[in-house]
Image (cartoon, rainbow, N blue to C red; front, side, top):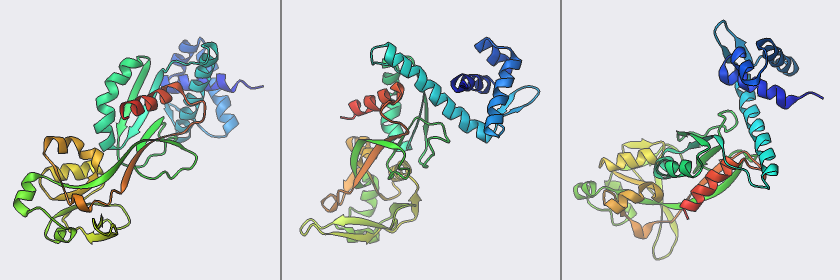
Length: 298
């Protein structure tokens, strides 16, 4: 039987170090032995994983995918063995790749990163913030934090936060343009809308008497692709924004933003999920990070 895990370990070393010689020194193998094992994998797969140059090794797109999967498999093997040997409790360790929306990352993850790493000193955090939907496998990401509905049913998710959208503006803007008392008053205001959604140019409201939901146009000269951008535009005094409350809670507390049309808020939810590719034997570092954030957000 082929030693697939052993071959993966050789390939990962060569890809990470970008050298057959350096991989050989790490694994106590000759450079030629490392090269032969990598070639064996490529022959079996029928595709090139590494491009050999005179100075270095470069990953092909297929090699990038294979490297990410191989790193995960080897990490799971190591953690499984530690779990069994350690009586059922593995120590979180290794590189943890996290991607988050900008708003959630700046509001929660960045301020808490130091405390998490102090609690788990054997974990190394690689954090990226973006509002685009990424492919966790292709991007070699362990966890993504998203407010959008899940598109990939093969992924698992855990809800960490449930908020709702509110309508806000700066005191300076309201002093200049007046405070809207009814959604119809938005016709005389500058609204900051989103570039996405079913009806991005309209906002939903709920009648405080009948409780029926209705929509009104939200006219304006600015659109945003994320809650973080909408918040920043709103803070400049540009106009009124309708945004997830968790984005602007510190601003509300400081008074730099104030809520308007509160009686007409439909309380439509905005949820944040931790999304990950996993199963019941989730890597200890991933489980620890999700549990840590859930603890801090209770």
